[in-house]
Image (cartoon, rainbow, N blue to C red; front, side, top):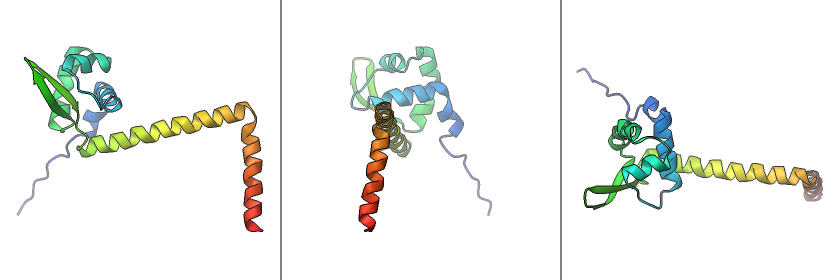
Length: 130
């Protein structure tokens, strides 16, 4: 019996498209709110034709969900139950934490506090050993 393997969805190439990444970043950073397609394009700083070109990638991979409709307009937000989105949210949180860590280190080194903290750490380590 021959088993046919389907290509993995989503293709990594699709998600690496710069416009898809901009939309994902916008929706993940603003995941508490819902947006029209026009607002998503504006928020992601891409043209509406570009959004329409990549829309199928977002839909077929379950990255978006419709939250409500008014008139002919549908509002969307990122689907936080989607496994891809969950990973991207974790990545976003880790990136923000790393940014803060670097900012703290920069501020500490600006005032020489980093050397003081290192000396304090060495002193604490010595105290623990004794």
